[in-house]
Image 1 (cartoon, rainbow, N blue to C red):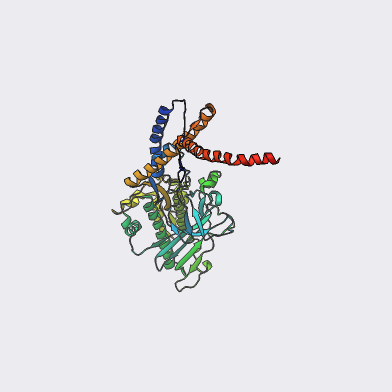
Image 2: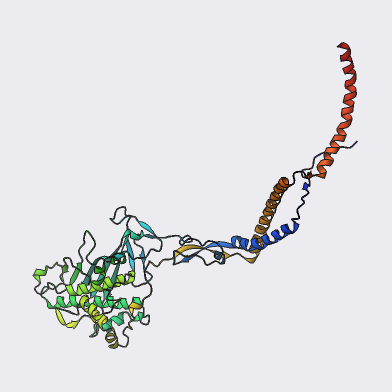
Length: 463
């Protein structure tokens, strides 16, 4: 007697006869799929993401597959750089060094923060809003300070500060020799930063020499002078960032109007001096101070990329320089301003000493608009090792091909069922199993019929 297997088969070769000739099409489609999938999977799995530093926040890797796929949005590959209060930085022009003073939540100073994210914003909405100078006739030192503020027009409202200190420890008849003596290590750079440093140093020397002259030659003359621009509720008269100068033609052409607050004058023994107590002192220091502030304002604006027509460092027009910088001082009319000499006749100043500075045409600087020079943490893709690439591409391609083949058969089956419903599905193992099961149950049905016949007869008699 035939027997059923102990366990039925879990799978059977199910087939359906299809009258269409699709073999060639199927093989061609599979070949094309493999050809297309290999480069696609190479782009998807042949690279690994690594972290790199870049000075461009909008950095996008120059990968070959971006020619066939949408390019990422600028800034999507890099993280913002976080500045905290007290951090130092330079711009991409690299003239001066700045220190972050305040990070504001808004222009009015409300919701000040201890840190702020920077995403490569240009500094076209920034300008100097406060300046101060100090000079000591005994220590032969001077310091120029400028505070800069940025409005919230570009989403980066901050305040930062810069300073330039001058120390005069060499006496010479030619002040430009002293300039080059102190900056001798920078000789040969011939860049924008060197030239501006020379001019700021010359302004500091003018302050030192002028204060020293008043200390020695004026009765009760001060040994130390400290003076600043007054704090105002609004912007100062010279306020003219690039975003403002675009709509206000006056501020970018007029000579910056710098007003001074009350000066602090300190005598040789540390006593405070009133200007009225020193005849001949009033007004003698203002020209040296305003000269220093004018060149500082021009230097900061040049560093910020705020290139205005009234910037004497960019537009070295003699008439503009004469209108901005005082060539002489009333207290000492025999000495011409060192700063003025360097601005109006840089070649003459250089020719007086073989080590003098070699001027560079600042107007040829090409790094505008300026932004803060920082390194951003960015993500880019680099090749895996050859073995890893081979395995990754092979596995990915095989997975795609198997999935595609299953989808192809499913679609073909659905189409065949609709187009050829009369064609049965063939399953030889299924049919054999059903026939075997029917044959085994046939004797049971016969025995059941024999047993039930007498019982039916008795029931008929009783009825």
